Image 1 (cartoon, helix red, strand yellow):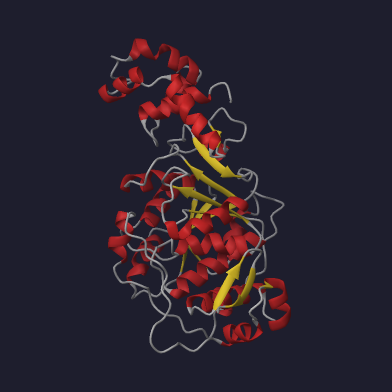
Image 2 (cartoon, one colour):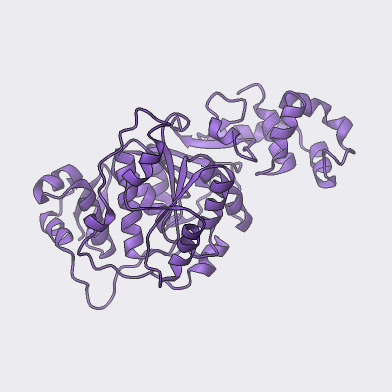
Length: 401
């Protein structure tokens, strides 16, 4: 255990997750331990403590904090504080740096390599899912760490795209890392942990609450060089993340979308506010060549070329604003089509004909179909939504029984 870890946990418990005070007071008193030792004399000082904070400061003990630390260790969580060597410098730059971070997996060196957040609605169109997954794969191929929030919809597409491309991804959660929020994404969380890290500011055992998501969103942008918003309504957590990005001097990117869809309103607002529209990873990464000299910007491979000829449905639900504004809506699974089966695109048909009942690696399927990695990924997504392919570990696929 690091020397000051318990004092940082104490400060987070006293002032609350997302508070600016722990870092401000640490600077004022030269260290978080110094502040802790002087705190009893300041309990009645309302320029330091609110009445509620004074009560918590007098009641929460270091032994209570040690128990939180033990719970985290028992569940294989690394505990990072601003005094930790592995604490990201990029988070020190934001208005309210987290006093404590809980991490499962391996946190990549986010200060030394490009990191891009991909966020959007939980109820995306098929085109939105394919675009997020493809862009994420392109970014991961270029060595970028893809950051998102671990939810269904666009978040899942972003994480999956990075994993399938053999890259790294981070998921920022609004609960304790041991809480099985969104049970449908349990397997995805395991994959993220193996290909990056799960990260939370919330101690073990913390359940989801509506206001947690807004607190969490500042870390999605804070850990990123830029934020790409795909599909989002005007009242959405994704736009909150974009606003945090602006406040933190991060870049904001958007995808061009069909303007008649409700999911387009938030993206259009961002465009009016000056966000950069992009169509492939190269459009994003060209912004960071000067900052990361070793970065190899790939050739442009626009989504308009990759997805050409595909017939894509609209959003899965028109009630996106209600779902996104609450961030605590019931779990909504991506549904396959019912009734008349939609014809497959030429690429998806070629892939389906190459599949067998035995899982095959993505590289073997590229050899058999002649498709590029990006096009194969799009075809896989199309077959998954049609319920005609089954994914296995190691980026292997088979016909669904």
